[in-house]
Length: 427
Ligand code: SUG
Image (cartoon, rainbow, N blue to C red; front, side, top):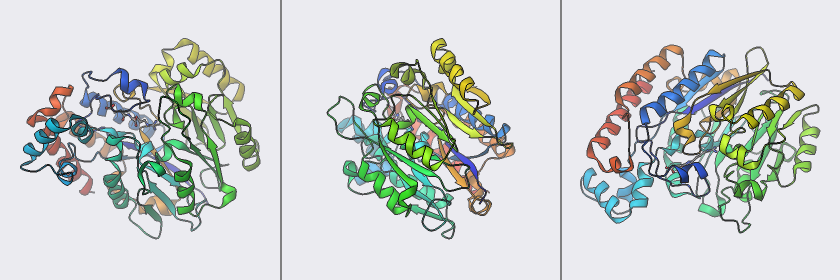
């Protein structure tokens, strides 16, 4: 089978803000309370999407759910008009209120785990919606994401969209951020690497449960020989790698990673060598875990370009750290597997701990599956122009934590959401 990868980037929502909600995510903690720039944030994300489109990579997007999430607050016992519900929640439980305002759905690598048609037991593309159980503001996303994925991947002959896993943190599941696929190509059977944590008593939480990864593999009926479960190195988690995609990224037959990303690196390398003989395992040496986390070197995207060569899409913070930049180029020169490097500016997202790779959900799809995807969520240059104009028109320029309490912001967010869905449904 031949397949191409479509990247579905999260469109950054109009309530993008810095609330310091993610323990163990150093960028989120250190920018808590800062003034955010939602319009710039969304335009930066859109510029990244456009860059990939211009490189010839298929691009889609996932719209943000309506925030503040008044419906959620009502289900938790707040009542009255929308304004009363929001003011009531803000007064009674500020943390819950901030969770209901978060634009964290932008990090679509956490929306679901995607199992390719070539790997799943029934030849369909499987998407297991992530429950994001470990963080309140992220757990709030799961129901909306499930609904959204069902509307994008609606054809039951081509797709299976699974509900978020039950049982909360016992089955904590953070989606594709902890999943890598290594294969000769997007269309041939691949080794699915599920990276998980384990309670080890560190200061920072380990968000992905092994049981959750095993459940994802079972739900997609993944054959045993196409699954490898790898424990994330405890030191990496405690250095701020709250997801595996902060220390490793794979594409087809290439793995780019920090040498200390995995608890048992040799077992992983052996599994990859068995499944993808001749795979390129590029370990970037001489970069500390701290530098890897602050630069987000490994939170880059590796994409296959139309001619078959590969490009690495890096956040601009990598170029600003000379030691990391040079170490990367030494490693790339040794391997020769990645020919092109592109630098993108996604600073507004980065300040909440989300780099280029966090902002996208990858779907390797056959032509038939691609044709069955709802066209309202795909981007063409013309649709990109319309979407960017909508953001320019409707997204607030700045947003401070205090602004979250302003009725004007709620009205603006509601109007932006309505216009966005009108744009999607027009297709
Ligand atoms: O879950 N940040 C997100 C960043 C997610 C990055 N995703 C991947 N690595 N794939 C998180 O920690 C911060 C929101 C705030 O603090 O306001 C936040 O949720």
